Length: 112
Image (cartoon, rainbow, N blue to C red; front, side, top):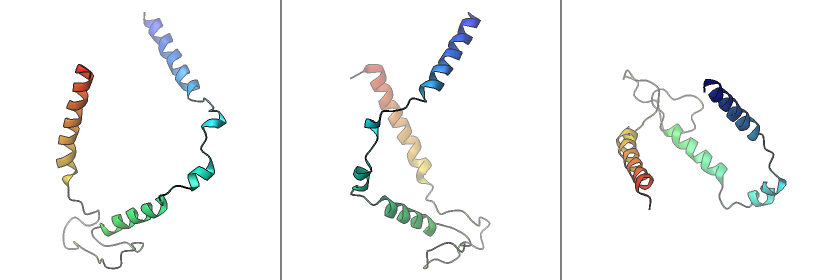
């Protein structure tokens, strides 16, 4: 029984390893023209999100910070550096995760 499990584990690892090297046919590739005609400017969205994070920096601002209306802050506190955050990710994510888990478990256990 022990050898059977080892052989089964080895075969499973081999199938997963070689199965991940599957080459997809060319019909599954996206055309470059289709990707270029996207209605959204993702580069601009990324630039604005990074600028938002630069505005949230605490402590002495680095030279590469592009926010001109901000100056060094919280210099007399013992928590220099880092980022400003409301800290509400724990207050929201734990109840949200519990709710999502209970809903998913209800679907899993009782079906439709």
